[in-house]
Length: 195
Image (cartoon, rainbow, N blue to C red):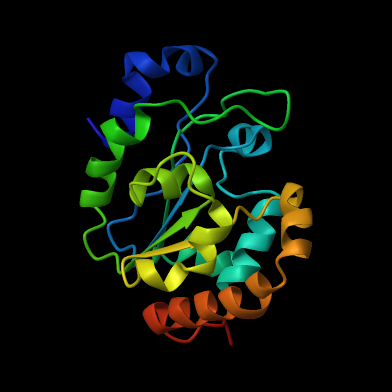
C-alpha cells in the first residue's frame, strides 16, 4: 500500500475520506527542496492542487520558481502539517490537527532523502520543526532565519491575510526573499526554460 493510500485509510482521516477528499501532499523521491506549510485551503482541497491560490502565486514569486518548476520538475516536495482542509475558524481557517505531522512526516521525509533544504511556512511548521514554544514570535524567527541554515529556512505565510505584516516588516521582502531566492537557485541550478 502506498503512503497516499495509508494516509487515506488512517482512522484519524475517516471524516475526510468519507467526504471523498484526498490527502494533499507531494513527496517525490527526487525532491531537493521540501516546503512544509500548515493545511490546505478549501480551494486547494477541492482542486487537489497544492498552493493553487493567491498564496501559492506569492510563494512561487518568493522562491523565484515558475509553476512548471514548482509542480512538474520533481525538485520540490510539499508536505502540510495537516493533509486536509480543517474548516473555518472565527478568523481564517482552523489550525492543523495535532498528531498528523508526528505520525506521517518522518515517512514522507524519509522517501525524499536527497532534500537539501526544508522551507518552513508559517508558525505551525516553525514551532514543530524548530522545537519552539508556542509563545515564540514568528517575526523574530524569520528575522533570524540564518540561525536555522543550512537545514531550514523559515518564512512568513504568503497569504494575503499577511499583507499588514509585510507592510510593517519591509526588511522581509528587501532582505529575506532575495536570500531565499539565492538559496533556491544554488540548489536547483538555473531555471530550465523551454526553447
